[in-house]
Amino acid sequence: MQLRQLFDPTSSTYSYLLWDETSLKAVIIDPVIEQSTRDIALIRELQLNLLYSLETHIHADHITGGSLLRETFGCKLGVHGNADTTCTDLLLEDGDSLAFGEHELRVVHTPGHTNTDISYLTDGIVFTGDTLLIRGSGRIDFQSGDPGSSYDSITNKLFTLPEQTIVYPAHDYRGFRSTTIGEEKKYNMRLGGGVNREAYIDEMRSLKLERPEKMDIAVPGNLRCGADK
Picture 1 (cartoon, rainbow, N blue to C red):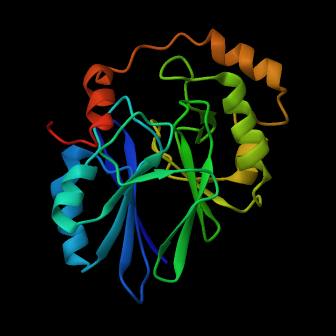
Picture 2 (picture 1 turned 180 degrees about the vertical axis):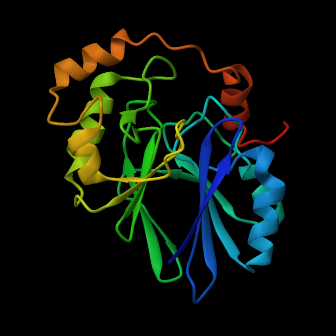
Picture 3 (picture 1 turned 30 degrees about the horizontal axis):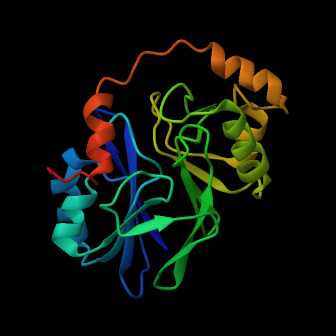
């Protein structure tokens, strides 16, 4: 499997393009609409057959490029079934699998940041969206966020993966690109070293964070899959 990590500097969002080397069947995770020209050009240059454009959740800080990719390549759009949207092709649930050539992504429902959060697991790699970040975790103070669900998703689902599993998050604000499950179990500032559930809930509820600048346009835009109407 081939992987390209792509970056949107405005929202500090990572997008991920994955493909099977033999069939050239491909998947993109969390595309950003402002980067659609770049992403479309790369997919064409590599002569990939884009099957799916997938979201890890309904984002509040950027609008997805999913609709433009669907218009260009005919790919299917996927998001968790809790999303209140009718524009997507696939309403994904825990345990679903999406094949691309000889590889597949397994859907792991990891709510907490929102109730639509999904992680995608493949070939010793997990794409964790905003659920598990590098030395942190996603905020829980809007969009159906819940700190108890966040703790359970990370400790009962993600932290049970093999420690060498590579973690690719949806964001990083300090320049880090990836981590591992083993590192986060030891060093995550909110969950590392076996922090208990109550302490995590208290810490997450005490955070005072600024409202995402683009939230009022990003959330409804993503519920339209990035389409203008």
